[in-house]
Image: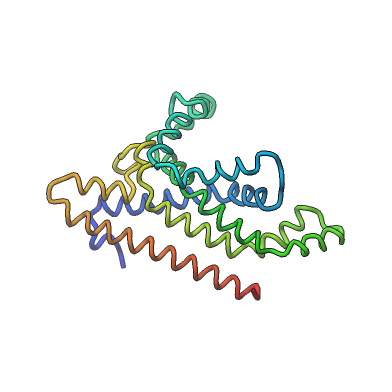
Length: 233
């Protein structure tokens, strides 16, 4: 069903922007999520507990605080944001790329956690056996670890995508609420609640958010179950 039939043009625009931002956030954060999950699972080093805490920090911090931290780091006067702007002309604040960064930071712990659980369930004896047969670290990761952790990777990516669709606090703090640029679905819902006679629009957007979130979780479980069956687990 075409959402444009029952959504206004601005609401459809917010939906499409939300899907685009969520997809970018997952693509941006998936490679480092796999790396961090592997390091936390397979390596023992000084500072490992601190790294684990930092990775999961967005889960316990107010999203507005995360958005403010991003503003300090990636704003036009921030250490990283100023350098990106001067060196490459990349501007994140008040842009949809900045919205993708904010949602990626907030959903990153969910992805790492799902991948890490899959890695922890892999028999390390398989890796050791491959090592004794002469397989290098890259070969072992590509042929053993990656296929076996695929259910967690897919589940984590889809869950992070669903969470990114609903992110509000970090996005509005870092990139504001600009129609057509950073006004994602949650921000459109917030905006509808701020105007007279916006109740119907708010209800439509709220119901759409529920459907998208529930659908994402169901698809995540379905993918994980299907991959487990394919792998014979």
